[in-house]
Length: 91
Image 1 (cartoon, rainbow, N blue to C red):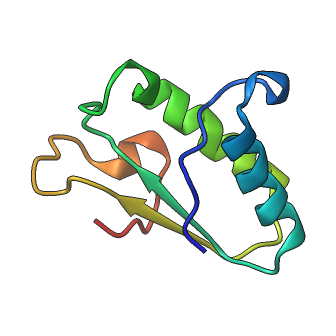
Image 2: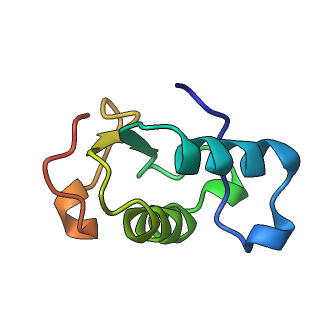
Image 3: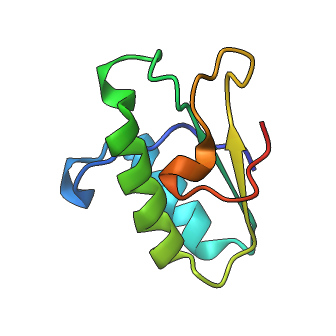
């Protein structure tokens, strides 16, 4: 299942699509593919610290799920994902 992006914010601040995404993740037997943009070129709401906070939140919330980290924009990436605690990522 491909879902709309979820921003790093409190549950009560999330919009309907974000809530539906999380509800689907909670109720469907699924793996998590978490896409991170380490380049921070996708706007102010995609700042790296916010993406990493959301990743950590979901890693805890869905600890029993299979997990795959994907790094987007690997062709312009200037940093190593391991520097941010993201091991074995696919770029």
